[in-house]
Picture 1 (cartoon, rainbow, N blue to C red):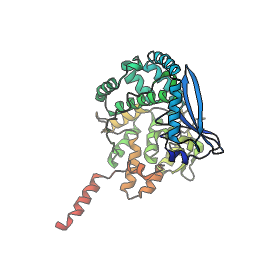
Picture 2 (cartoon, rainbow, N blue to C red):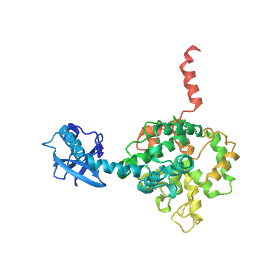
Picture 3 (cartoon, rainbow, N blue to C red):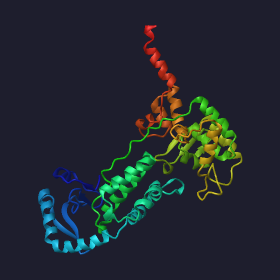
Picture 4 (cartoon, rainbow, N blue to C red):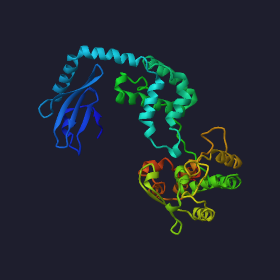
Length: 393
């Protein structure tokens, strides 16, 4: 259960004891808290700062004190200390007016983003977006000068760079402000100027390879300089696995006799382990690689990578799709490596496979995730339309 929510008498009554004492915060009056001990006792507290010192004042037992009374008492306690609070507010305001957007983003990066795991240790996408699109324009602005109007103007100008850049930057700034509001109370930031801005509607990508396009791609992959990376794309097409999982494939995860690949929970988005049946072509490819394998736990080992396995591969992909005649200046038309996963799913659906089976092959936890990847061939739609009106012939 979330620890911050709008307090109501009913929700307070529903709070249950856990192994340790838990503290909950009223979303509307954040100075009002309620603690629930492991024995089940519930107590209201008022927490605020006076002259930089934290105050934690007990209001009373929640079985005796009503929620309305607790709110009134919390406000009364803070008003009682209004002179000290005023002094503290002045000090906080000074800090507030000396803090730049760069500084609060650094707090967010260190306090939150640094703890998030990224593929191959890459820089988090929010950090990339901030450094590339926000830092030079708004980074040195003091947070006291960043108004809702300024925020709106900035994102209006950012729309020209496309929905991907716009939405990632908006997520970065919203998250930054929410982080410092919740965890850096000394800064005195209580309003998120980006909170009410909306993301741009994105383009729903449905690109997958036809049989003929896939044949051309496979032929093109035979001609690229780096066959190790080419093998990664081949395995991705025939397994539907995410490229990150393919690149991190380990020899001990494979049972080539049973044609099974086990992806451990530590390397999946859902934190569940999956068994993927391997197509004969993949088994043959892996057996071939095993004969020339380096002294490494990784199937796609790289001595030049600090992670021990191959990273990147964009240039190989670009060379292959150009050689196959699939490159297009419009990024929504030309195939991307992730489209191999969509192709894997779509071909199975078109061949008549049950979507629940395809979902299992893709290691999805919900069918709704699978339907995003499954697309109907135009010829199938044409056949359905012709069939609907065949009685007129």
